[in-house]
Image 1 (spheres, rainbow over the protein chains, first blue to last red):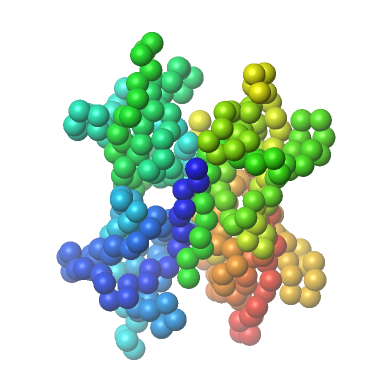
Image 2 (cartoon, rainbow over the protein chains, first blue to last red; image 1 turned 90 degrees about the horizontal axis):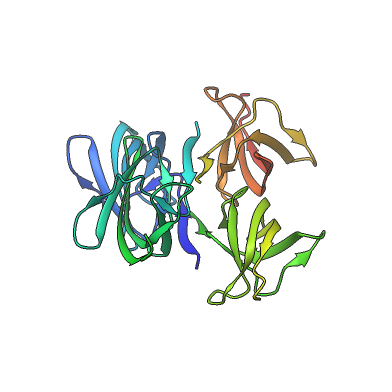
Length: 80
Length: 80
Length: 80
Length: 80
């Protein structure tokens, strides 16, 4: 009767993000994932890669065993 | 740096739900609230009232310090 | 990099609880589980069985991929 | 009927940690706080200060509206 979920403290895009506006992206992941919202968190392209930048998640949606986040990129690591 | 949220184990409508389809409703609440999704939970009209019915939450959205749930009513307490 | 956890809204003992005091029990479960604390929740012996009673979880400990809860039984279903 | 909690993605000690063993510390905070466990997270002395180091939380306890974490410091920022 439990509901599986995953606590996430960073965004890992794996290049699957979609640009919605200049700095606004959406990203859909499998399963129900809990992210901090309205708080700057790090963005990575791969789990073990370098930090791509910093973003603030503005929206989280849970539906049909998927999580979709909408996040605003607030800084980019220029070396990437 | 923490993100305040609230763990909810039931739906309390306070009569503020909106019917979207025959058995499908949406309800917007203040703050970020964690509900069990895809699992039958009880629905109450008021916090201390009788159970109105049982529902399954199909979607949860967190945005701008509000939580919107979409739930399907799967049974009604006939005495209500 | 996510941390798997499970949202639980009830206690399912499977008969594995340990009595610590007259109405106080501890129960250890696999994995990291999030339960409501300080709030009355239902206790079941098996996932699909009848309600055994109502309890309030007073303590939750997460360690080594296990969750241990300490709960006080506040009412028993006499028909069990 | 909701249970207030706070999602935390880092440890902020405010100098209130207690050393239990060479690299093992405990820290008690008010309220129920959800932290990632078994995953490296940053340690700060103050919310807006520099990173003190990196730690892995090994144990989380919730009781009486307080959260106690036990964490192992795995690296220190030498400039601090």
